Image (cartoon, rainbow, N blue to C red; front, side):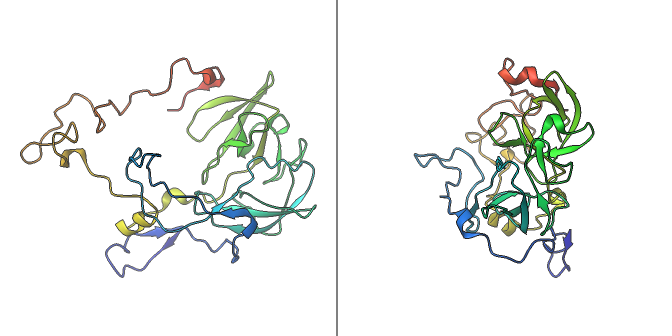
Length: 273
């Protein structure tokens, strides 16, 4: 992590991720595009997600979550920052001349070689079938459905641990503590995803949040009675309701929101804590 001299009160505790490990290159032009800003609004212009808006201009990097160039080796050209995700990304130059962005693993560096193959070597960054990964290994960018691309363990520092191989399924322990079954013919990348220090970052000041696209969050107790169940009162009033509620009066804090009969429940062996 990178710390700063306390030249101002906001700088005193501010921390940032150290980007010295990244390559000093511009993003590959053919793999970037501009996404329209919605700022939490729907097609009618109404706010459907609060606390979103502003932020600096950014370009979206087209990421290859499938990594479906089977048995074609690739070389890591550069490690880069991605403004749309917490993890770092890597630009891969494949032997056939094509370039693609992939999610970078923790110890990946420019010059490394990776490959996607059902029986690839057990080396960090390689992508192979779950059934060919021994128990105890860590994986990321795991497919839930065959040929759909990675859906599990894609954020900074996350990974899933292979616990068992049985009856056509691989048992994975996710970062949340949940243990679930995944078809063992699905693909996953070996290792832990990059930027594990992301959760240690201290924003430090309001302006930095605004540049990230996060607008201020107002406490319910500071609102009027018509705007929130906690609003109104003289001075600091108690909550006045039996259990925590949202602005719209919905119960939160410990209430289960997952559907009881969801189709994927049978794949979950142990719930997250």
